[in-house]
Length: 128
Image 1 (tube, rainbow, N blue to C red):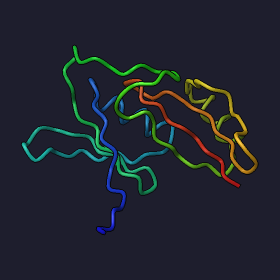
Image 2 (image 1 turned 90 degrees about the vertical axis):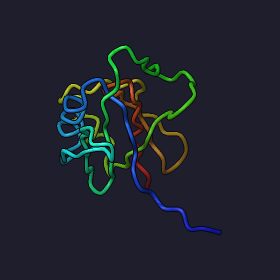
Image 3 (image 1 turned 135 degrees about the horizontal axis):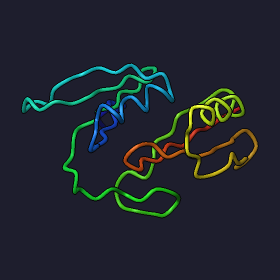
Image 4 (image 1 turned 120 degrees about the horizontal axis):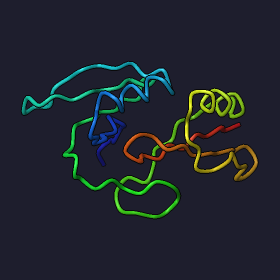
């Protein structure tokens, strides 16, 4: 069987640079301006080794819903934190929108969700 490993997450945005700047503000992402193979511009992010591509989409493109509703396509991606309380405090100070208060799902696992530009859901996890 082939060995599959992580490569990237790809987000479509009506304003890729503004979206990238949000990730930079919230998570300290490094912004890298890039191009698609067809020559169109793209903004890439490095979030501590997590690669995210952000490509422009038409302004009339539908956006997936935010919150907890189920939809087709990407539901969310998760970022692990060492201290949930500290992460929540910092992100709240920066203006993050939480869609769920931190919740202990089981011993050793606390999660919460925030919403990013283009209604992308991000799960924050603290695993003990």
